[in-house]
Image (cartoon, rainbow, N blue to C red; front, top):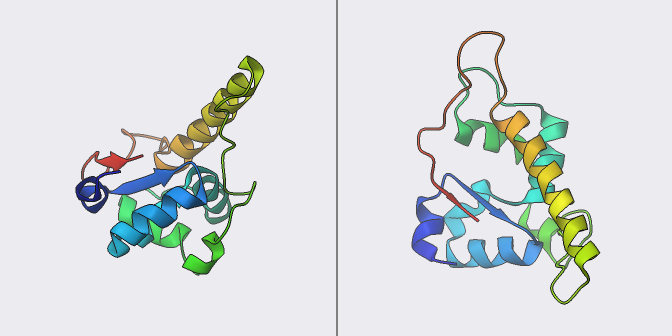
Length: 129
């Protein structure tokens, strides 16, 4: 992880709480835009999709409202994508399927298709993973 990339990213997504903690420890100002993938999707589904004309930073602020760093201590299957390293082919396939579903849901929430016109575009397309 490159702290310069974290600093310049509009959104930082980790696969586990540990990744979020490392990113925020390196760049504390990144907290409002740094989430695990599962946490971001879960919170976004509770908050609702990005509104027409709403920039990404404002939507992330809504999604992260009330969130505290203490919530990301330790590990949790609610927030962490299981690491298939050393596992079987089926372990890798299960994780790939989970990631596909999560990213599809995130794209629908962060970049919804309005009734007319093109989807909202972020000010920039920088992201750190």
